[in-house]
Amino acid sequence: MNLYDQIGDEKIDLLIDILYDEIIANDDRINILFHNGFEKVKMEQKRFFRMYLGAPGNIFSMPNLKQKHYIFPISAKEARYWAEDFEKALEKLELDETLKQFLAQKIRTLASQMINTVK
Ligand code: HEM
Image 1: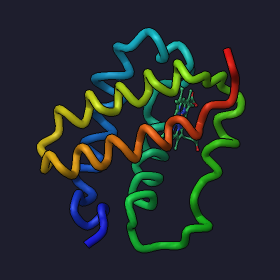
Image 2 (image 1 turned 120 degrees about the vertical axis):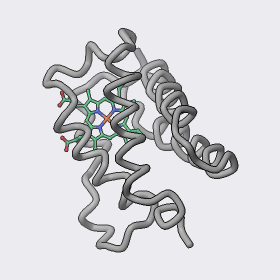
Image 3 (image 1 turned 135 degrees about the vertical axis):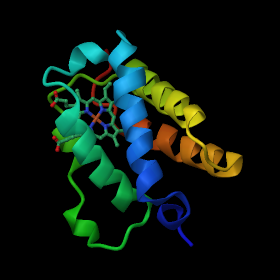
Image 4 (image 1 turned 180 degrees about the vertical axis):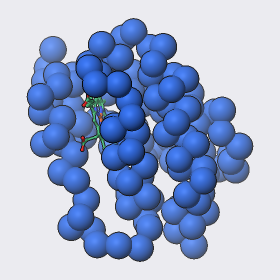
């Protein structure tokens, strides 16, 4: 069983809804970067996380995430804030603790790969 099988569609969707609607919407450190509301981002992220966690499909249909973020200045700070918000959302989700910790660790690495500016 991969992470996708263990977490499942329903909880992936719930996690992303909590992340944007409850956490990032209220996090003024980074929500200023989001100009078009959260609906499209949430939809794309739900798609992304299915693939990232191991849903069956073609790896080449993965969006080029880093390139899509070049227009937003993401320094080590923004990446850390985003990862912190992800962990807060994860805390609100009912999920096995070991799985949560494993996922949080993966996300910290992924978020640091999104850094595209020093300031
Ligand atoms: C693991 C880290 C991340 C993942 C998986 C992720 C994923 C995504 C996805 C899938 C989209 C939608 C792209 C599209 O339109 O096709 C998106 C948009 C966006 N992301 Fe991220 N992202 C991550 C980290 C970050 C960080 C660290 C920031 C900065 C704080 C950020 C800011 C944004 C913004 C501003 C948008 C566009 C919103 C708009 O269109 O107004 N992301 N992200």
